[in-house]
Image (cartoon, rainbow, N blue to C red; front, side, top):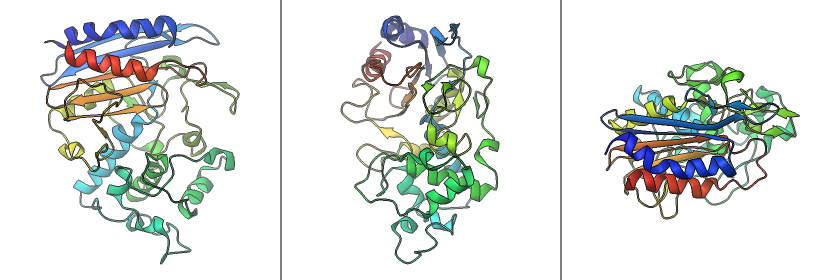
Length: 328
């Protein structure tokens, strides 16, 4: 079964979604032997003027930043011996909750716990409503006593990991090297538009959609990375071929290090093997890697353009595409 066969089998739901609900999409499939197929359809932008989408269009990857940048960056630091997964974040960020060093739960957070979302931290917080000075917001994240709760998928985990990367490398996230096919600063004219943001008063194109990442300077550990379909598939292929195998090890019923592990009803569909990992991004992006079947696929869309406040059917679309890629 070729990558092109799999893409052809899965593309009808994408075409239907673009015809009715989503401005544009790119679907890509790659197999372990390097066979690759990509197809783009629809619009990079509907407003303020109509522009077509193509294979090389940059997408705001949103939370794919967590697995395509932050997780690999942390694992490289582990490989270099700079940190261990079970070290506390305070080992890299000694001023974390510095006014309550003995009692603060945040000082007991570990890299493994944050990567696998096994912490007490909340899912999200509207930090951008507290101001837009990046340094002050970083200090606020580090000194806040976060409300405790059961483990949930949390942007805060990865904001803290992003700060740790900056501290350990001495390089701001916006200056961190990323492979070909990824960037922090895309050409707006070559980027898929996201939302007409009521807070910023414009259609977001070539600048990060996530409000907290924007307020933190344009990039954070949870969001800010842009990529092309080939950049995402390159990363997926490297994992298929054995790069960083530790990301395949389950840390909980639904989580690996950074990545989701297959569970009933997940966005990757039901047909993939139990040895599948994946992740999604709020803007309409996603990537999945089935190690048992030797295939990976990515669906990149701009489903939040021009507004997030519309039903786009993205959950059903992702599942339909995943099932068809695997069952082709």
